[in-house]
Length: 593
Image 1 (cartoon, one colour):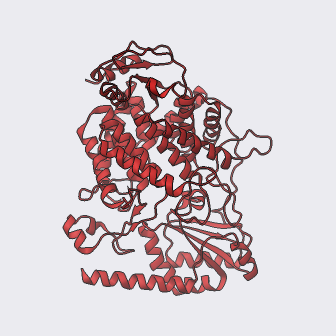
Image 2 (cartoon, rainbow, N blue to C red):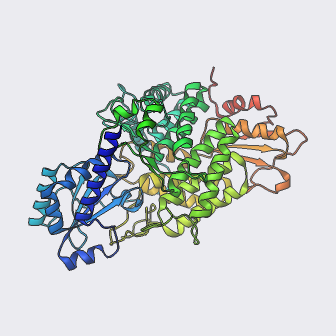
């Protein structure tokens, strides 16, 4: 053990020495001004602190004498942690991590390279652009975006996206996609939605994928590894990112709500245990990730096969203790959903505590949220939309109106700061990941972020009746449904947006005093119903009218739940045990055996 730790210190020392030799600097507004003044090209090393191949590239490629000499002689070298810089991460997310981007002195891109570059390849690329600093074949002009017309997808286009969704499913291994095996949250949710409507193929796809993804769970500490390579589940990359923890926790919670299968609940609780043990700060907010490697650059398969005692005897892989609003929003939303499914007060307390910490420490004076304690750029869309989703999730599971008010405020901040401008007479569509990138690079929209806006803003519209939120949802959808965007696999996110924008949500209203345990039991039973797209409210006369008082429901001495669909409302449901069956019948769903 001591020998390995000494080796790790030597590697770290060597890495720090090389960083000093190369003169790594941050991304900044004056970067290209300096490049022009010094007549240098620019190399951006966009990496991640948890990334194995980033460590290898740092220790091997950036230690190579020829590479070091070329960089020192002809380049300004910039190193950026993509977790800390969502503006650059969003722009280059298809190329990492690590991503290597070369620029000329004016900020024009010359090359985009993905993944580990061994020294000979790197040196050859550097020499080529030193001799001829013109864009290479990896840099192509972005196609002009033609926003989709308002409204849902046309039937024929919807059918094509559904066909693409089915084609992207791996019938041999399970889950969606090819080389990288992991459980895609939107694909799983869309499958569960289709399965609830009686689609047996979707049910099989979901169950096979949920079972296959167990291969990525850490049986000792809990939590999930990022993904497995080579199109199989047996070659994992061992980093544990909050984005994956939140997605898996949410996915298995939904699966448990739908099926009652104990194994799905166990999976969600294993993720929760890892978050609590390793990614939770003393104040209750959440850290960002755990490194893939105990010793940077060394494969960790042997380490993660050890017992808890033996792992701890060797040390614990680095935890990135940055507290970002975005990662906390993801975790809070997932924990709130798991609370809604299980009724565990511990989960709600944890989610609420983290939300309050982020509100206190990351809120911006003009609305929305900062990323970290001291951002180099920003604010970024991802932080505010993730917190809007978290705030709406907390409202859904508590019926505490301040959470809905906060979600409205977050969406208003997004509308005022990140909306794409119309150009060339086209209808404005979508929201940018950042208002501006330092150095003058043009910011870009993100599919995931626009999907989150469309779904969140639409549901907030359903709760409040405020048309501006419906307009926000439609604006995001016009980007998502644009030609060339919607067709990118996986297509499940666009299909979920289409399904929700085209239909009224299931509307569930508990009528009764919040101090009445019978009303609380009905509210919890409604929360546990396995459907994300629902408008769940609790009318207590003492609090006054609901935010969107579009129904008149009777008050009585006995608390009751009313189930409303687009065409009708039910008679009162007074027994929690009857809630699920009555909702199934209202939706025309076949009840589970």
